[in-house]
Figure (spheres, rainbow, N blue to C red):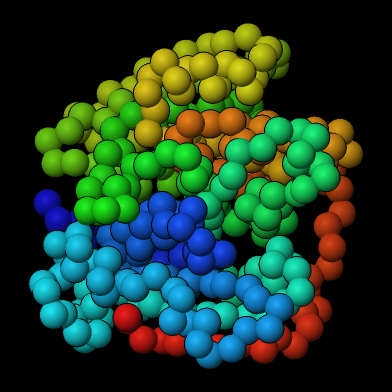
Length: 313
């Protein structure tokens, strides 16, 4: 079945922030493939200190990409792209700090999913050179798909083919993993290869005992579910199981930073993102009784110079 015939129930607005470098190509491919599958709005956002209209010419070509993927025929027009049911906006904003520029944009727009390219770094480097990808996700509290620059991911940028077959889903009593389960199911329904039997490994890690979570597991035909339990090396165990299963995706719910120790060393999800060999889907969850360190107030955003292009090129 063509992915465009499979609809997401909640995924209608996708944001892809990009630095327009070759390293962002993989994340762009994932964002575009999901937009086509969901018939969603896709905003491709770039932040520059002094943008000008010609910057839009540096953006990846949606039309040519879809032609290369075989979704559109050679010589397709902008109207052909629109006929797929998607809306593409290429946006270049002015801000001295790319991270804050993205957050300012998010303060004015509601996104169902952010798709980001991420470089893998370790703790010392991350503290002195904070990575925009994870900081934006943790501050925005939006569901975020992180696509490492050193892996193909589950969408092949060259031909648009998908390989979403094996998913590892780490869970704990807190935060509830239900939102991650739900969004993962939507991704699989839209992108899984016809006739394939996806393998979903649900693993509990950590010292806290599991309680009755009353989780609702999708009962799609042909889906294979496995349940594992691991010890207290939370990040290490998640990465080990993902490697053993040759995972195409790790999907997990995150609380973000709940203490200053998290800010210095990274929360569990953040540390998984920095070392995973596959894309990571992080779904934010608010839990009662959890104290979070205050974030910068981005509700009052400075005026930003914007160049926008609502075309489909």
